[in-house]
Amino acid sequence: MVAIVGRPNVGKSTLVNRLVGRREAIVEERPGITRDRTVHDVEWIGRNLVVVDTGGWVPPHRLGDTSVSPDPLAGSVTEQAELAAETADVVLLVVDAATGATEEDEEVARWLRRGAAPVLLVANKADAVASGAPGGPRHSLPVALAELYSLGIGDPWPVSALHGTGSGDLLDAVVDLLDEAGAFDRPQPLAEGVPGITLIGRPNVGKSSLFNRLVGEERALVDERPGTTRDAVDTLVEVTPGRQYRFVDTAGLRRRSRVRQSTETYSRSRTLRALHASAVALFVLDASEPVGEQDQKLAREILDAGRAMVLVLNKWDQVDAERREMLERERDRLLHFLPDPPVVRTSATTGRAVQRLPDHIDGAIAEWTRRVPTARLNEWLGEAVAATPPPRHDGRAIKVRYATQVATAPPTVRVFASGKVDDTYHRYLERSLRDAFGFAGSPVDLAVRVRP
Ligand code: GDP
Ligand code: GDP
Image 1: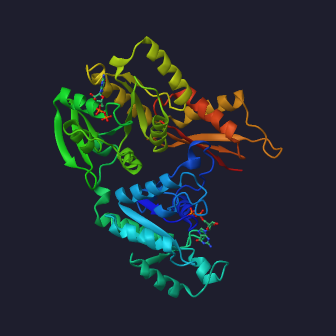
Image 2: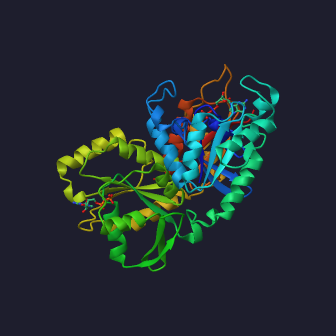
Image 3: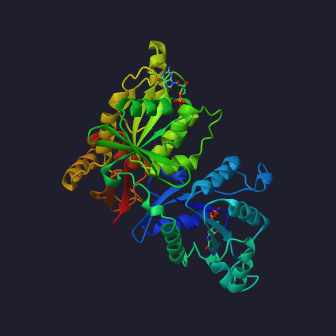
């Protein structure tokens, strides 16, 4: 996990696009989810990196100062930068080389130096220093770089996110650092055929109780090994002979069962990290309580991370007919964007339906990893386009040529067309694809590529 940190306007988004762009040429044609998406998969020399763009960092004493950032969420963005940097394997501190180090840069550098994760200093906009563009150059690039040593982060990496120079060397350096730290030895979502599972849900919905019920009931705790860095611990569970799951980042769950913690901080980066080591998220709701905004946020994290989902309605022992009806309405209203996940109504207290979870987990994985043959996909596409042809673009008819599934986990489909299709049509294709093939519980990544 690579966290990108820096004050607003230094070029973080541009850098992320540049890093992602090495693999994914077109990213804009995914309406809805992607707009505020800040997590990206990047592949570099055969290594898979998760790049988290943390948004702008605003020093605490300037929070709420609208001249710094008009974003009312600045506080939580700062928090996220801190959290991401706390749990990331490597942090890229991005500064504007043309401007030089500002007080804010110094503050964030000071703070990052105290953290555990290694930090690389990215001297972005190197082109602006060298070329004399506006905002540049008070001096030459070597001088500008030399000045950045004052941040105490070590060698600056000159990069132009805008033009792409230096980004390859930077990625090499990131991979070297991660190799050294053994970060790539971490469990993968489906490593050794043992799927990673993570329990996601608000505090107090019953995650620990469910986990202990599942593990305790089966009495099949095989192994507990330090999975990721710091205090993240995975638990291998054999639910039936030969059927294993790796529950990701369970230290908290197990600890909480013994010593109750009075407060639980919701760490977004920790959630993201767990999701990325998992195939399936058990999305746990307290069925006896109203569905809230935090539930929605967590559901979106799961889908944005591209993970399969099983919806667990826990505390079912507390649900009466009236509440049941209300819950249905809340689901329709607040969780309509869920990808039709399998639903399990559990009670960790009585044990109700807990033993049914493994079947649903397996079902969700099957959908998540399902590959649709190209011929069937194109049969579907032909029918979908015949039923509703794409609207004309700039007065010209658009030909939708063919579709292919380029990846599984999650299902990733590329449709090739002679011109750009609008968001409405894109959504139509997504819906139609789901109607045809299901992919229950799994996000589907469908993009339309233009091939004139
Ligand atoms: P963020 O707020 O840190 O995410 O910054 P952005 O990525 O939005 O970039 C802020 C501005 O700097 C934009 O106008 C970019 O086009 C510009 N910018 C980003 N990277 C570079 C670069 O390498 N060179 C130059 N000259 N401009 C850049
Ligand atoms: P976590 O914060 O999500 O890990 O939630 P816990 O597992 O710590 O559970 C929070 C509280 O809810 C505890 O007091 C549990 O005993 C209780 N609880 C958990 N599951 C159930 C359930 O299915 N039914 C009822 N009635 N209470 C439950």
